Length: 367
Image (tube, rainbow, N blue to C red):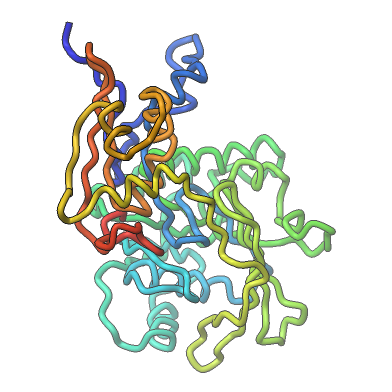
């Protein structure tokens, strides 16, 4: 009997998800996973696009008409395509496609010149026309991703422009289906899809209930951004952020009328970071320039770390924290089952994590 590979190394490249999925159906039966099987598996790492602000998946960006949404979209697109921090939030560089479907190229040219001058940027692409969902849009986006495999962000401005013919039926089921279709696409390629949409006029106790349409939009999306002003003529605005993979927060923004950009005044809550497992910190300290790669059994790793812990427990802890090892410490982790037990492999990736204490912010290799 040959060795059976149970887990694979993490992979963050754009393309179909080769990792194991929590929701996978084949034929007429549901493919189930026991709790034990979950802990014995490593799932693909997909680091945020903007740390603490924008993750991979499908997000709604919502605001009233003529409020400055498109200017903020251009600003986010520029920062991601250049990899420059946005309001102090670390950014991972990637190619960006901005479907500015309510603009024309002349207006885009003037806007970008006001905002960023004449700086060249070969990683930011624009289109003022696109087909609709179910009528060629999927194929257009797929073709772009094949031509630009380092793409990390696609902006669709606006949702209404790509709704399939007959998609003006604003039922919960229809809204949920539209966003689910976009989410399936973003998940398959490991990118972020940001979809611009409008609010309705009615006020609500929960700001996100102001999203035009039904709750199916928010229910299917990975999160939403809501841009609001108390007065339309004001230069001040709030940006509410809510998502599955991040803490809810409110950003207070000020419009720079000279450059047409949004500046950050302050954030209502501090950037949230989950507590790192002590085991992860110890592995991060173990791997260094002097020891860039290590392979052995779980028992040998426990002994090397000076830990009194069972090999199965250690392996499962590393499985759960594989993404943190990859994204924050720049360490690739994989494990495979053999006749003799689990074999663990740790490999330090080239980047900024050279002090043995992990990365404070973005690890360069985790793009």
